[in-house]
Length: 117
Image (cartoon, rainbow, N blue to C red; front, side, top):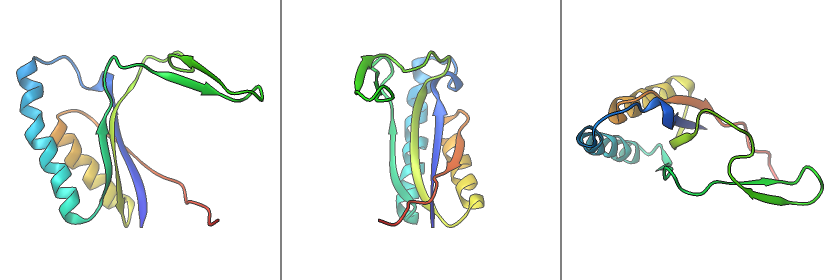
């Protein structure tokens, strides 16, 4: 089984009234519960918009931690979930379910193999 990251950038959400966002809570949580029932759920969470962001850089040989993103970007990660499923097709199916539940686009990417220690 492989683990997949299903995620969205905050900018993909779009502008909607508060009522619309509240209407997405139940269908979104239903998908999470469905993942749990199917035994594919690893983790899910939404990132707090406007919360502090820190960057850690050790390329100089000394760790420097600063406020703000390491690089300027026009997109910010909004939320994600990790699923453990047998193949790409199953991961894409769950990404589609999440997209329907949330009401905005999702991307899905497979994690690389974890080396044996």
